[in-house]
Length: 426
Ligand code: ZN
Image 1 (cartoon, rainbow, N blue to C red):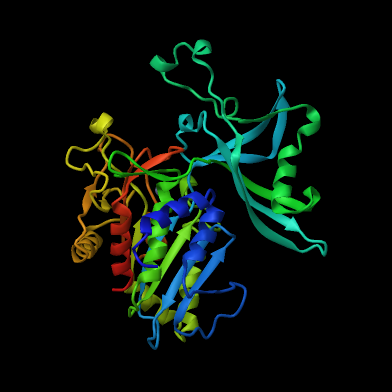
Image 2: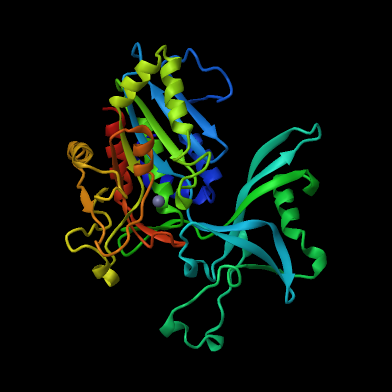
C-alpha cells in the first residue's frame, strides 16, 4: 500500500479492530504477498520471500527474508495489539434490580471515568465445537449500542464535581444491557452464538470485551486531530505493518512483531516477555541454512525499534511535563528516554532514529518524564533484555492515553510510517 489514503486506512483499521484478535486479523489483511507459516510445520528450507506467523490470534510476527546466502542481521519493529478496556467475566450475565447486567474485569490501566455513558458494543473470539468435535477459533463483533455503564445522576452524588469521581471496580462498572427477568440471563451468550451463526451449545469458551462504537474520525477546526479509541497502540501497529509492506529489500531480515498483553506487563504466551520472538528468529536462521553460531552473529548485528504512543503536552496540565520535553501533536515522532530503562533508548539507538528522521526530513521530538513522577514503560526494555539487541523507544504523540476515546495528530501517522519504512530497508 502506498502512503496515499494512509489516514483513511488508519481510521478503518481502528474501527475494525475492537480487540487484539481483530487487530491481528486486520494487520494480516494489510500484508501484501505474505505467506502464512504454521508454527507446528517444518520451515526448512525457507526461500527468500515474505512470511508471517499468527500466535493464538492476538500476536503477529511478519518478516521479509532477503535473497542473501544466510541471515546476516534483523531489523525489527515491535508494537502491541492490546489496549486497556473492560472485559467480560466468564459467567458475565446476571439480573439485578430488574436489569440484565454484565460482570466485567478491568484490563490494564483504564481511565475508568472515560467508559461512563458511552454506547458500548461487544467483540472477541469464541472457540466453537463442530459436529465432528473439532475446535476452531472464531472472531465476532456486535457493533451496536448494546451496553452502557450509566453514571450516577448528580442529584444522587452532589460532591462529584468538587471531589472527583471514585469508581469501585466491582460495584460501579457492570454495564446494563436490558430490562430483564431471570429467564433471560443467557441472552448475551445466545446473541454471541447468533452472530457467529452457531448454536449456543457449540460455543465452548469465549474471550469478550466491550468497546465504544463511536467511529474514529478526524477532528478539530482544521482536522488537526484524530479522535479514536485504541490509538495506543493500534496506530503504531498500523504504521509498522504498512512499513513492512512498503520497505524495499534490505540485506537484513526485516521483521515486525505485534504482541498482546503489554498493558498488563507482557507476561503471556503472546506477550513480549515470551519465547515467541526468540524462537521465530532462531527458526528463520536455521531455515536459511545457518546454525547457532549464525544465529548469535545475526543477533549481534541486529537493531530494534519499539513503537508505542507517547505523551504530548496537555495545555491544561502543562506542569505535569518536564519543562524541556514537551512534545506536541503533529510535531513528528517522539524519541523516549529514561535513564532507569523504563525506555530502552540509549545514545547509539537515539542517533540511529534521529538519522532515520533526518533522512526522511521528518521533525523529531524528545520525551523525558518528570523526575518526580513514576514513568510508564513499554515493550522496548523487555525485548532488549530478552534478546540483548540495541533498542530505541519511540512513538507518536497523543493526549488522553488509556481513555476510551483518545486524541492524536493527523499529520504524524504518515511521518512515522515513512521513518519505520526507511529503518526496515536499511
Ligand atoms: Zn502502549
